[in-house]
Amino acid sequence: MRSYIPAQADAAPLFDSTELDSQSARAAFAQDLLSGLKRTPRTVPAKYFYDAAGSALFDQICELPEYYPTRTELKILADFAPQMAAQIGPDAELIEFGAGSLTKVRLLLDAFETINAPTCYLPIDISGEHLENAAQRLRTLYPRLNVKPVVADYMQPMSLPATESPRGRRVGFFPGSTIGNMEPDEALSFLHSAAEMLRGGGLLIGVDLVKDPARLHAAYNDAQGVTAAFNLNMLRRANLELDASFNPAGFNHYAYYNPILQRIEMHLISKRDQTVSVMGQRFSFREGETIHTENSHKYTIDGFRNLAVQAGFRAGPTWTDAENLFSVHWLHAPAA
Ligand code: AVI
Image (cartoon, rainbow, N blue to C red; front, top):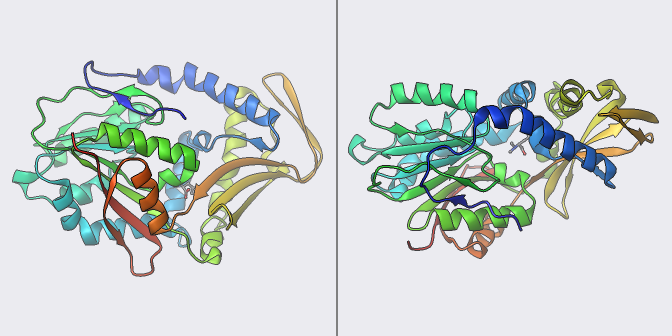
């Protein structure tokens, strides 16, 4: 298992965003795409959806009528933020994994009395420019909050900047059910590392739930075709960054719920026999052959709580919506 433990805070930053954003990111994409296309079945990691165009498409997905997770989680956060704030406790050091545009955290921050509010907020995200802009806006809105963005891939080992003798507990915030995009062993490893890193504090985490497959199917096969465009964007990105020769019109978006593995699987299916080149290497696709691009695992409430306990947490309260579509869990980390 890989370890995701951020090394303890001694030195300041960490990963250089330009390095992450350019050369090494391109090299990693090349390596993962080439090795993924040589595998059977062909697989490309879902993290490569998120270039600027892919991130914009994902933002559109979050607004779609069929895609319930984002708005449902926001409503749960809005409805139960005071209870969540009580679990977080006073003067916390809040660490958000995969923070993006820093909107969800505001629902939590607004639930605190000023005197008890988190003193320090470390949003971790891979996109440096985006993160710094969002951090700047947040500083204006919450002048007493020490906002320290960390440009890093939270799935890789990293270090966190030192904070001035934090008074409160260290608390993780991981909304969006991004944990569902990890394989179960990766999710366990991530949670295990988080439990260590958050000793004495806790983790607030959003998790999408098992439900009627028709509802899930609709969420990943929207009528406007935005999810299809998001999936196909992986090929467009490979053409732009790696000089690949994919014809996106030669592939179909295919997403279905696998009830045995409790996950949505997204694939790109070749519409015909075709040959594609990537960085000078040629790959032949038969008609109907797939590239597996994403898994989105769904959990039962008990299934997720059991996973968290296996990772070393003690399960606290879980909040859901009226239809039981989505869940937000408070997990107690082990004692410091
Ligand atoms: C980011 N992640 C939680 C989304 C999900 O639902 O698994 C990504 C996504 N894929 C297709 N639609 C949205």
